Length: 304
Image (cartoon, rainbow, N blue to C red; front, side):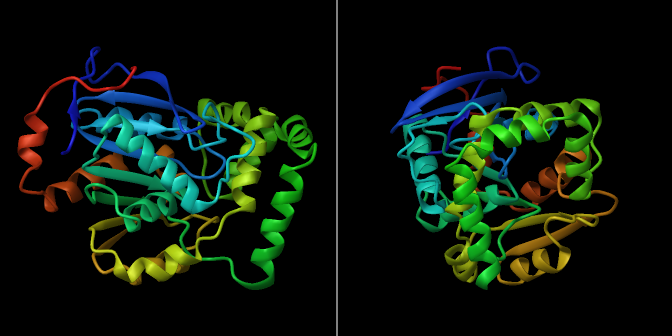
């Protein structure tokens, strides 16, 4: 069953709430009405990253954006294992509990890997997948091992507090964002500065990076039968176009779109272009029951 819900305040009224499930206190932001589009951000970000895109998608979908476990306002027990399979399984349980049944899933960077792991593990109804700047090509060999080990050491020490204190300046955050090829407005830079200033958020990011292993997802890409739209920024300095093309070539039903003049945070830089690309792709992939679901209206088991 695919869910379709109405926002009490209409498409222009976003609202946030918390959902407790399996030792995780999820924060989710809901906007719009219609079939559900689930949005999952990348490492280091939060659901705020999708604010502009959600606003545009809300004209057609119920846009549900979550904070990943350990990120921003989604809280986890210290015993939680933030490995890719465990995060994907936590998302599956959230989907089951709330009966989201999304028609469309949209991931950015590491969020794409989370969503594809969920699909590979057998989500209730495989959705259309939108992969924005997907982080799917493994960091292999010694470099990958050193990367994960360093993240583990930093996450388990007092480093998160030091990083939060030392890095959370507007100039440094703007420099980091420009370093991945993205130029955001003052509000966009401030949103990331506020995130980096939170030690628990930094700890959650480092913990996930320490357990990150995308190799099984990468190896399984040829087995995916769902339609995938891959959208990349031509100026992305975090995920190269060569990596994006490598991952796309392994997918059986993928379309690649490269947007000029944008970097890794393409959906924040050009939300109109990205929303248009998504809507056009969904139109081309229309499913037999989509029109029915889009007309369906009713309640939902969400607290927001």
